[in-house]
Image (cartoon, rainbow, N blue to C red):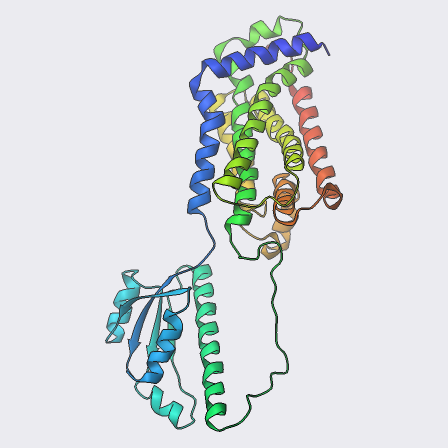
Length: 377
């Protein structure tokens, strides 16, 4: 390989990028916009669930139960109802996600020592949010039950009942349970995989469509030199994007980086090799910018979103789909980023993922060089 020829191809590609504002905007501005949009819009936290209350009892006991919900950070009373029709209307109009219905005999049952009932109605259209809201409601009722039992023991002059097991939960790595802390690192992987393949998927195809590939073929440039020359400018831009994304995560979204920033850049460099070379391979095989763009999006965007563990837990997928995820290096990169960001892991904990990521990059690079033929077909 001739280093001067490789640098000449890289210089030509750099000049094309800087002379075309659209390419530069695609490389720098769009990743930052995607990070902003996804970072603010995509959240798995469920707080301030709108609640509609129909209190048919209207007693101090029923008001205590309502106050238990209203005093929680998970619920906000959005409306008061006077009938089931009002409850249905509030849920249908999306004014409320959950309803609390307290029957007329609620207080009488409590005073008589009978089990009192309260109905909780949840809008189940969004199953994930409904499950979380229902869990919060059950926790609020359980806490209220415990307080009522303690009051009864105090009135009777008895000591509080002994609790055989007292759980003392402690959350490691994400103590505040903020979904943003694991979404932002995963977003870096998703955006890099999509943008990298999109950028390089147009390079060789553009040369064929504009007719400049014939000039390159007539030069002494070898396939390896051409591929590396096309790859180098976008690799630099990719590292710039990773650095900007890390800064935005740290100072804009306040996502803690507990591991090494240098290790993040090193792992991102290895992943960029795979993603950029995949785009080049698609461009070499298709020779059409439109087809290359569509194929690269199919090979990167969907797997990065659905099969990398970024948005959906892989262990919850069917076994055949779990096996399929091993074919996509985005899975390994997302795992590594989350480990470095949230746990502060070192490379010794990610040797298998690192080996698979390096192997994927080497395989795609070899295929891109092998599939490029310096001849007209």
